[in-house]
Amino acid sequence: MLELLGLDKPTEAVYRAMLSRPRDDAEALAERLGISEEAVREAWDRLCELSLVQYAADCPTGASTPPRAVNPEVGLDYLLAQRQAEFALESQRIAGARAAARQLISEYEDLRPAGAPVSVEHLADVDQVRTRLAVLTENVRTEVMVFAPGGAQTEENMAASRPLNERLLVRGVTMRTIYLDSVRNHPASEAHAKWLTGLGGQVRTVAVLPLRMTIVDRTTAILPVNTENSGEGAVALTGQGTLTALCTLFETVWENARPLGQAPRRDEGELDHQEAAALRLLAEGHTDEGIAKRLGVSYRTARRIATVLMDRLGARSRFEAGARAVQRGWLPPDA
Figure 1 (cartoon, rainbow, N blue to C red):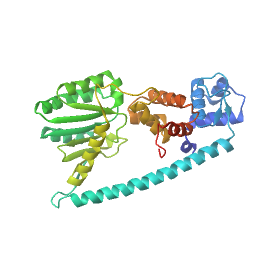
Figure 2 (figure 1 turned 90 degrees about the vertical axis):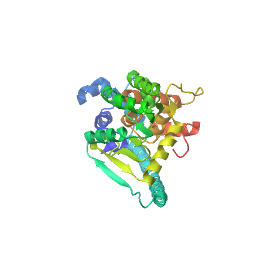
Figure 3 (figure 1 turned 30 degrees about the horizontal axis):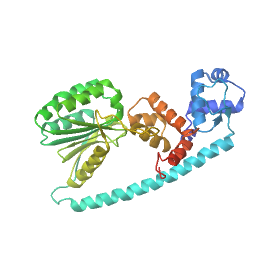
């Protein structure tokens, strides 16, 4: 049950063992719990982030001296209060998003012609999605717009898409694709993106994308049923109001995206786009695994980014990192 407070089962086991045997070092804890010393030290790092243990000097990673477990009456009460505040804020955001969504739906319902109702076609699996996309793109007349999250592209997907992309670009179809910034660190994905631009395609990147999406001729959009699992299929949407809203979303993200080949620009002491996105996710309470998925990077890379940000902020917990980021102007006060 303590997962809700950020403690997975191995971390909770280490914390409980530290409370019952406060003098045990990493070797003793590892032997007692039947895990590796590295796993114990990783649990210490996580407990330090949650302010449930304290090191003698500024919580150094990999310290040889074991940290001291914080009294759970203090540490867990603090985490509970923090989670309650986060849930209250999230409830407010959901209520605001629901109201905005209702207003948007109402506005575009008024704009939608009577003869152009919204159509929803369910595509049950990946094969059906690929077949529907193939039909759509073979018949495209003017434009294709794509959100391509997930980080590095697989060799299979890139190889499969090249012949169709080439035919479309040769025909003069406008192709605009937005990848995650993380593809810039993956040679094969970056080479594929440059290949697209060489044929006349337009490619930009952002730190985080809201979902996977393909819009064809501004009349049909393919969206996943579950943004966390593309294997559950997708839906093909048509209808003027719906597509107007989705095209507006694409154009907004496109305006703020960075063209491939353009070097990042930042002043000394400022954050790049990926760091800024990671910091927002960090302040919202996402785990390293969740941050990795949204940025399209490995768990290790996400953890490194989070650690570097906390070091730069001089923060010993993620809650403290969020507060200090607001003070420094790296996050808005309502983040």
